[in-house]
Length: 226
Image 1 (cartoon, helix red, strand yellow):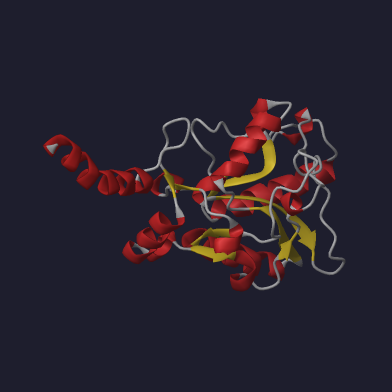
Image 2 (cartoon, helix red, strand yellow; image 1 turned 135 degrees about the horizontal axis):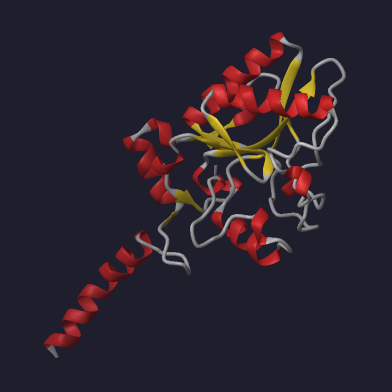
């Protein structure tokens, strides 16, 4: 009887503990909305800022809010882009620098809920172009951005090696057999991003990870909650 009473007494506390420390199928700790809010109270740099509200003139082309992506279906309910506070601060500086040269940034994707990373891995024909959910994505940490350059006068994107989300070899950030103009545009993008703390990944010229991403937790918060 005492054992039964003890089990009944502890059950609610165990349930709360399990919920607060919820692990994904791979054993990773993935932050809930409550976890996220708590982390922001402790450190304002953890806050996810909506990029468009903080970076003047930035253009959004959120492919995963449409069916125009490699999954051929809508993955986001809202066409919005978020990133951690230090990431957005640097994007604002980059945008200001680009403006002086007549250019600007176009964002394809930024923070990505973990559930979407799971879906990408299951649906991708080439797993080399999507993050392994066993480790999670820098996007899930709010520390990665997919982007390109636009001409401010024409509002058109500069010529780049491939379209966004291409699985072609030319998508590599070091692919060399390309026209001079495209090589110049790609290097211009990579160089300005590098100067502000971002690093391009080897197989996607458009994907940049923010240095220090290791300091931020994986998250699975839908845009609707932010």
